[in-house]
Structure formats: C-alpha cells, structure tokens
Length: 310
Length: 250
Image (spheres, helix red, strand yellow):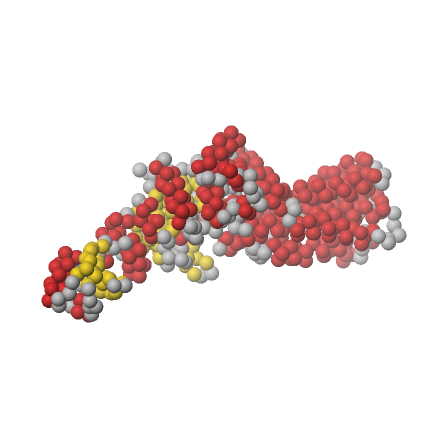
C-alpha cells in the first residue's frame, strides 16, 4: 500500500515561536489517519502545510505523489478539504456553493451536476439547495462543507475538526459519511481532539504536542503500550481510606470517582485477588468490581504529559 | 501552457462569484457609485465651463473610483467570513484568486464607465475619439483594479473598512495630482513631476486628447504607461499577497 500523504520534517515558526518542529509521518492509501493534539499543538499549521496554504520553513509534504511545494495545484486536485476555520459563501445558495467548488476543480458540467445532486440528496440538503446558506444551521453548514469537499470525487479527504461544535446527531451523521467514503476506497486525514472519534474511526493515529510528533500507532497498540493505565474499578458498601488501598502490592494509584474507587495497576488479576482479601479482612461487601483498559484519552494524556515515547 | 489557461478559466469563475456576492455590498455602492456621483456633481455644478471641457476629468474620476471600488474589500471580506481558506484549499494558485478579484473590480469599472462614455457621445465628441477611448478605458480599468487589489494586501486585516479607508488615503491624493482639476500643462514643474507618477494622469490625459484634442503626452505614452503600471500592480499584488497570506489565515 503506497502513501497518500507523506510529511517530511515539516517545520514552521511564527515570530520566533516554533509552531511545528520536524514533523514526519505517512498516511497510507485507504486508511483513516487520526491527527490528535491539544489546542495549539500544531495540528492546523501542519494541515496548512500539507495542503500548500502555508510554506514550511523546512521540509515538505507529498500529496498523491506530488511535492506540495513544487506542484501545489496538481496535489490539491486530488484533495477534498474541510478546513477548521472555514465557511461556505453565505450569500450564495447551497447549489451555487457546490457549483463554484466544482468549477474550481475543473469538473465537466454534466459530472458536476450529477455529483452535486447526489451529494445534496445523500446529505439531506437537496430540498434546501436553492436557499441562501445564510439561513442554514451550523449542522447544515458543516454538511454542506463536506459536500463541497466531496463534489470533486477526491481520493484524499482532509478534515480539520469536522465535528467540532456539532450536536450529537449531526456529528454522528458526518462520522458515518467519513467511514462510508473510506469504505469506498478513499483516504482520510482527520484532525481532531475528540478521543472517542479518533478511537472509533481511525486505523492509526499520530499524537502531536508542542509542535512535535509524540507517537504514531493504532489506537489498540497505544492503549496496550501504557500498561500503567490499566485499572480496576470497585464499589464497596462502606467508605474506604485510599491510603489503605495503596498498601496493596501492584497498586500504583487510587482515586475516588463518585462512589467508585479507581485503582491503576500494571497487574489487574493480582490486584483483584488482593482486593477480595482486603474486603474480607475488613468485613466489607463488594458491590461491583470490573477491569477497564485505558481509554485513548488516558493514553493521550499520558503521552502528552510524558513527552516523547517514540 | 494548458495549466495557465486552466487557471485563467478558474480566475473567471472566481470573478463571477465576486460579482454575485460583492457588487451590491454597501461600501462598494458608496465608494463605486455614490461617491463618484457626488464628486462629479461637486466638480461640475456651478463651474462656468462647457460640459465638454469638464468631461475628460469626469471620465477619469468616474472610471478611477468605479474600478477601485470592489478590489480593496474582497480579500478582507473573505478573510472575515472564513471563505478564503476554503477557496485556497481548491486547486487554484494564489495568483488565480487575486486575478479573479482584479477581474471583478475591472468589470465594475467597465460597467460604470459606460455612463461618461455615453455622455461624451451625446454631447458630440467625435465618435472616432470615443472609439479610440474604449481600449483606453479597458486598460485603465484593469490598471486601477490591479491597484485596488494591491491596496488590500497590506495590512493583512480582516476588516474591510480598514482597507477601504487606507485605499482612500491613496486614491484621493491621486485624484488631485492627476490633472483632473487642473490640466497637466498648467501645473508648475513640481506638479508635473508629481503627476507623472500617477497612473490616473495618463488616462485623464488620453481622455482629454481624444475628447478635446489637447493632450500633454503622446497617446502612445499614455497607453504604454498604463500597460506598465498594470503589469507592476499585478506583479506587486501577487507578491505582496503571497507574503501576507499566512498571517491572514492565522
């Protein structure tokens, strides 16, 4: 499988502040690649360099095999983009917005018409196609932006926080469409800080922090890598002092989450046995007991806090 | 070559989009229609001169204000409404977008210029003179439009009023030094030197020559100067916008 996008040592400074520092990664054809990072980590700057909107101080990116610095127009011809800070033209109708983008991609009139009608129907906007976008809700505008990114039938879709600020239903709808695009053979580069979104959609994720790539791996491998974040959650019938629990071997950390005691350990089976003994010795009843693998959010926080683990 | 032609086509697509969106915006109407109208009235009413004498200056002023009305505000507007990044994410070069904006400003200038040209024809300026003036109007509109888009490059603001105001600071002095109110040959030496740096001077001079038969420069100089200014403004506009685009998007 070849690389749909390849970033090589992308570096960008703004007024002496390093926004992106030697960022390299590869997005394989046909995968959904997540790009995770806290606010200000360098996600949007990286995307702008990949799409050729901002020139890197160092490094380059290849999109569909084209060097974005040397052939930006040819590279963008293969891309559909939903930028983070972006909007459709609110003075134009949904139809006019799609036609505008289609013409800027050089689509034939017949292909453009067919694609625009199909997308507007699929995204539930056909009945409002002649209404000015000014009257659209945020969810409708975001759906239209995705239509605009797809109207040219791109091979690669770059999405910068596409579901940010959307209601649950609209966000789920967009996620379904992203997955559908991928199932039909498209490559997706998805920047998000929604861990659940990255976890459920992405085949691989890159985590960026303070302008540097911290790690690139599958969500499963990332979770497995951080064994210290495995945990046992237990509910006792009475209050328990956390410092007592910390005396149990293999317990690294314990904290209260409501009535639940969350115990972090690299060895959950051993801790479960110890907790049962602990409860018996103190005549405590265990109301519930379960183990939990670290979430991607746990891993993300650990990696971002810990710096480079690559 | 094919790619350049394709980009030129996309510039026209952008120009059509600009025409639909920006021609009816308040500042465009004010700076492109109302303003030149009132300036023309102030210039003509109460002057003890035949209209024919006033017409070259009137044509120059109207064309200049109309062709520079749309250009300064498009990029700041697009920055503010967050459509610029969407546009630049398409397979278009930055120069394609800039040229599209110049073209929309150019067409606005051309449309409004029909009024003084018709007036000139009505008050019996030689039709041959008008016919010769048409290519002059075309190149002048292109020249002034390129200047107007150049004026929107710096500072890279997202407030259209800021660029409108700053462009007015350039436009008004140009009107006063370009031989509109006082013919160039009646200016002192320093005035003539100053006038020679304004692109508007050459268009007004051309109009005076073709309407009244009294020009200061040869027609070829007028046309050549406008061509050179157009090229310089276009290139400077491409370069300056390229420099400021990252700041505009951030």
